[in-house]
Image 1: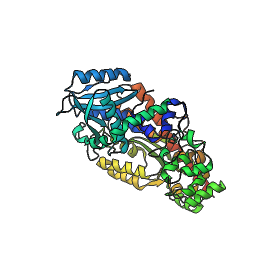
Image 2: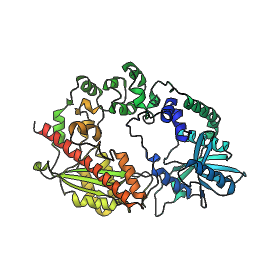
Image 3: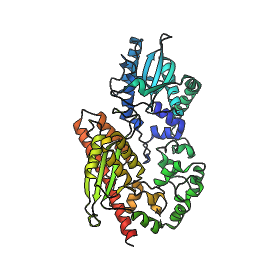
Image 4: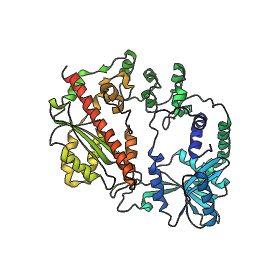
Length: 498
Ligand code: SF4
């Protein structure tokens, strides 16, 4: 398997991860490592940036890298005065890709390269990526004289058609790339050697496994560690980075004694872990539950936050609600049969007016609105209220009635050892509402829901694919609000009637 930019960056993080990725079918850990940058959004934003260069020629003639590489050489040498899009090259067992090349106006047969990022700021890995790409392009006979990154400008607001001149900021990073370039051939050689070896490199796990997100091979490396080695591996690592490992069961809660920056009272967490019994502040939970007012509305939104705004009046990364699920328990006697209402975008228009209409039609004039981590629902309702002045009063009324089911867990009033120090809805539902099961759903978390929703907006051709996505999204979002219903019911039965 040839090296490419992704493998190069993986190998820079850890040679063992590179070896495992290429040479084995090692089980990958169940972390949420899918990022929007890996998906269709990356292609969408690259296409938007290519509009900065009229008359460009795309070298993508299919999914076969070698054919695309041949096409790239033909375009480069056949049309040396035109911008080139989606350029592929191979050299010495390494593949590289560039979104945009355009002729150097001062130097014949030299090119400026641009990589498009669905991001707003420069990171070290962007420079490493560009340095590797520059090296492979130069080595394959395409001379590069300047390298740039196209970032999105978050101050841009779309007005009508997408304006690539205003959406993108081009950042010339040639000096930083030059500084890295001399190291690239040696790194690639070392990585090729790693891949030629029949044995995996021995690397002791540590902070590099966890930042910026957990490595896919934590399962292979961390489960084999002794308790002492695990404790050594997390030394100096912050709570935020360690948390996913605890939640997935790779680390024991007792390790928390060595971690700083934990928001939940650490002593309670440790006590719950040591005694294997829940730590419960009944009075505090009851006091919170007493604030609930019938009819109870259980609300959840699914949103997108595209780097390139899809709708007029929106900015990069602005949160756009595109789906909502609402369960309603009208009276104390209705818990077993809550009413259910839902909205999902068709993907053809700005969903905000429709979703606001949905809310104002189905949310009653009074009663609590239950959400999990209600700050999010509050911000979505606030965004809708700004965008839709006609419905502002009604939406603001809903904001004032939000009741947060997250509060007892966030404040440490209910700590169960099996939460594994995680207090997301998905972490607490299996313990407090075991009848709720996400495992068999096609969409199992908010990030995947967001990716699926984005696809609804950009794939206009395949209606049957859209119908399937909508069905999967509805099932997922309804499961979230049903989990809210069941957990609230359980808390009320346990703490209000005690
Ligand atoms: S878990 Fe850590 S040591 Fe293992 S492959 Fe990943 S980064 Fe390397």
